[in-house]
Length: 184
Image (cartoon, rainbow, N blue to C red; front, top):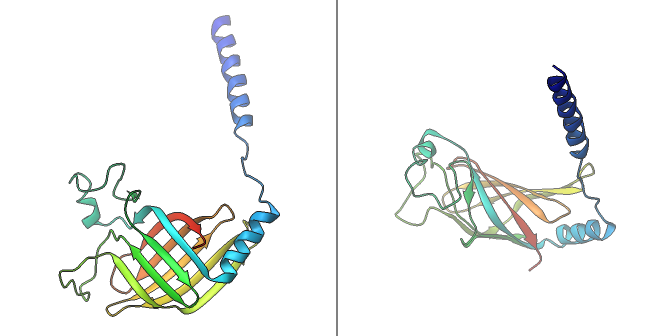
């Protein structure tokens, strides 16, 4: 009985020490990082390269789970983009993008036998920037129009220059990308 009691006490002490060591590991944001981020956003001249895509899981996407066509290290809700050409560039009032797309297209979209990725060179519409004082990030929202669809972008840029792109479309299911921003 003493052995069980001692073992239980050791387990409790170990558990508390483990929990106390798992405290918040937030890194402090330096003034230099904040200035660099503000300058990058205000200049409207940057490029984002994504390393992951997060498509909406639908029955069509679920049927791909065991097909073997997804890139290595990918699942139906997280696609590895490392090694694939992709970018989203903002240059003044223009957007240039080549983003791989994983998801379903809606009936009114024309396939015309071409690439189903998101390729565009067009003007930004309804561009807005919002600073988030809680985590020091910037949220950039805008619309873009191609010949066949309307696209709504929401980009979050964090002080460590990591990004999240949420893309909604008039002809496709939503998708999110994560990556890194840099000046061009």
